[in-house]
Length: 374
Image (cartoon, rainbow, N blue to C red; front, side, top):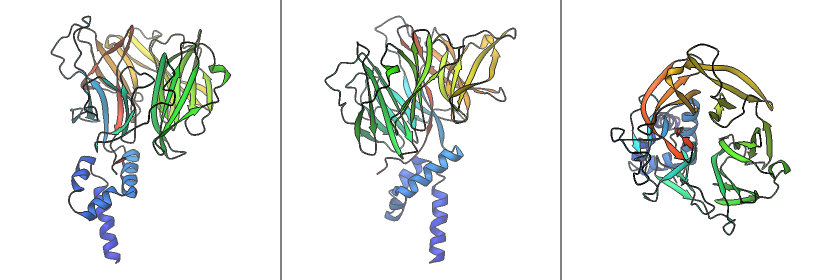
């Protein structure tokens, strides 16, 4: 018996190190392996190893697969050839092209990635936009029910997604505003496959404000908002359903060049606006949120002719930077180590998305998992 148990432990120790693609193939090997790999304990063990050891980590990017074909970006009849793809975090060679789970050819957007799951919806969100929680590695997804506010017209919809460790559940947070600035907040639970309306909206949100950017960390949705000349960060805990507001540092005076992400397990503001004191150099200012106040870190300094734009921060705490080529409508993706200043050119050509005068680049961390396998 002891030998049999030890043999099983060895098998698990081997299997837990493998990529999801191999494990999915092994489901067909025999019933015992299928039961093992599909068990909740193995799924959790495999995910825990990937997260803690940063194993099977990828970049999920909206990129331009054919940059040699020069589109006329000012021609509304020319459709940009953008593609969501997964790239290994070290060699940056495309390993998987993502197609919409429904097989739709319409443009779609990814609104968050957590533990192998991504949140997918329309590129332009509406109150009735379908929302899917999808694991592209195992090709399984869950479709959320329709909004409980289906009969209300909203002028603005924001969507964020992630895992809440406190309640052990995956959450999507949808914030919607009417033309009269009324705010509605809904929370989706993957565990119950249902939406819940948040009734208690704090008074400081019942005013005119503009949503800018956001991120999701440890079950909390963070949004950069602007109320007149004041910038602040609104947080909403999808477990406790509580709101908080953190006034941004005084140096932040414009939404241009502003980004919010997570650096070393702390909410981080990155601001690419002010000139650098060193001649021929540019800088990105950084602040992290510690005990409800902002601590400024030393700036990230780089040569001004690199023309970087900040995109975000990956799981290895490297800055994701884009070097725009406006003529082609793309940006070269670079990984910049904040501590060592080492810069890695990935060769990935990100697609430059434009909404009016605002331009976006999309590159986020994706960690493989077996979540939603069964």
